[in-house]
Length: 286
Image (tube, rainbow, N blue to C red; front, top):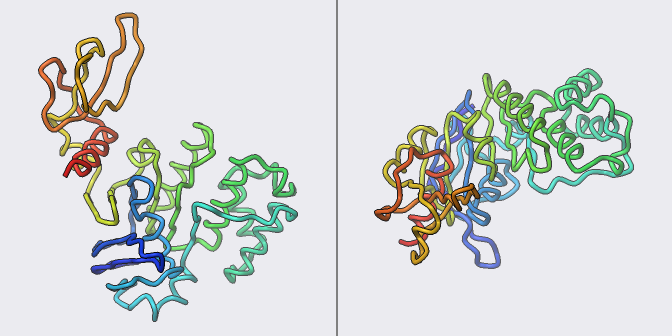
């Protein structure tokens, strides 16, 4: 599947402009991480890609066809987990997935439901009512319904929210395997999830794309702009964006990103999180 987003802008009836002249090409097979602060426009972009919203201007092409003409075919190939996913609390896990399978027109639904329940490790809860599930278990049900029907396009908005570290690792691996023969778009605030599995990263800020490329390329943009120092050495410093503080026996060790590091900071190799924060902080002062 190939998706081409061309000069798309989106303004809501309230007057809020969520996306500004955004252009982006997405193609399978790939796992693409979508990063950005709250309100950056990530969820709006995903709703446009699912045809839940229409752009104010610009166009979206799916395999060369305008999305408006290809909407039915797209939705037949789509798996989508929105950030706020409602469940029917009185249904069991299996009943809910059976309902979703019917909506999607999934053939051999019973076998498909068994597969996705196994994929998200919910076999023991298959007959449990949704209202009895924990937050993490409900999130896994949401992921399961997105996987129904083996979609060729999978769009996941904050899929690992509420999951414990072991579960997050499991689902990172699951998404990575899934992306071997399809297009997966993963929006998250958890940088570790993106670094572990995504081959491409798109960073959105205030409705515009700040970066699109590999994690390694993004990390390289922060080279020479990351440093560590002891908090006591920076007691008089104002405005230095500190990204981490660690208590040690010698005092508080700080990590910061800056366009120009102070003399007392020792340069450090950047991580993906450093590079992301440097990119956003640099944009904020422009």
